[in-house]
Length: 140
Ligand SMILES: [Mg+2]
Image (cartoon, rainbow, N blue to C red; front, side, top):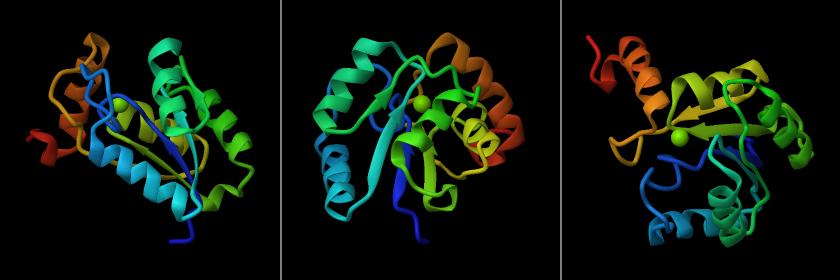
């Protein structure tokens, strides 16, 4: 698809909401992305300590406390990637944070299945509306 840059979410995208370490599969996925020349930035609404620790492990830059769906964190990530927008994809598990912030920046977005059903309390609200919009996520 000509994408060379990935803006990835952390919680429930690369790692379960309650997990403290990355699983082997996701470490390997990031390693393959590096090998294939993808540039990556992690953009998360989670707190600095959790996000920077995992980003360091993956050897990618990160933007914690991003306040998605506000577009500012994703816009910063676009500047860090130094790629045209059409070569960047946003990857995340939430429609109303990851996908919406990506769309507000005019980027291609990939909605993933959440790793686990547990979420932050505020995310439960977003999940309710997600189910209304996405029948495959349990809506009607
Ligand atoms: Mg997430």
